Image 1: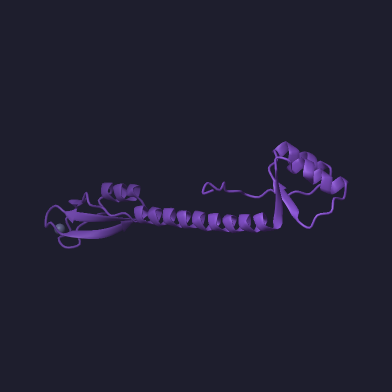
Image 2: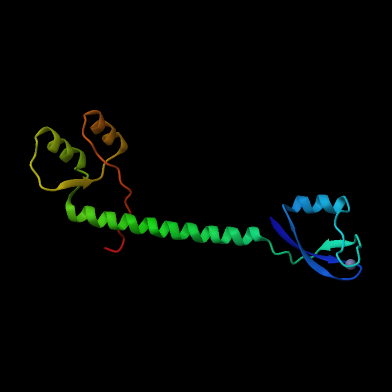
Length: 142
Ligand SMILES: [Zn+2]
């Protein structure tokens, strides 16, 4: 829906009118379906100041997306904290360490986390080693 402020050229009355689209306005205008509520004149034009609900809707949508992004970032940060506390960081040795756990039955109280390529994870998966891919935000504050 779009709202136009219309003005009658004859009596100079302005009034707001709703249309499903700007094309609908053009269509009604061409067919002379737009007339002044006061003097019935057909010389009705839309004024340049035409507030549109689309703009407002888009704005709030952007706000929502920013809020959503912030919330997601918070959740990931908390998840990262949890992992840092409860898992040992093995960095690029992740694949090696994961295999050690699996094949040598390595005893450890903590799980491990680190970096691996997609190919590495695919290989581990084929060997029956379960890994979990998690989103990670690089900590730039340290
Ligand atoms: Zn009029």
